[in-house]
Length: 93
Image 1 (cartoon, rainbow, N blue to C red):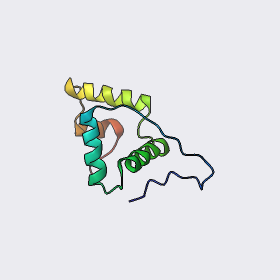
Image 2 (cartoon, rainbow, N blue to C red):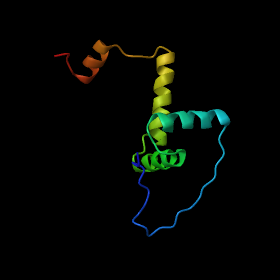
Image 3 (cartoon, rainbow, N blue to C red):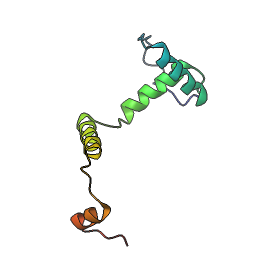
Image 4 (cartoon, one colour):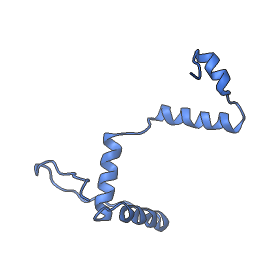
């Protein structure tokens, strides 16, 4: 697959990084990289880390807001479509 180009043209040295994960999580990683066509576990992990750095999905405030919204939903503190349209001045047209 080689979408995980982590080279910088040869000016930086390669470093080896070790980390610990549970066997079940490692099984999930292996299923994922193999299922997505990567050539190796390392390639998949490099790609995933680079993607997380270049395109961060959430910052802390967004995660807190997401958790608060989930709590509102569980507690029944929601707004109907009609109420939202009225509040924000939009229509269904």
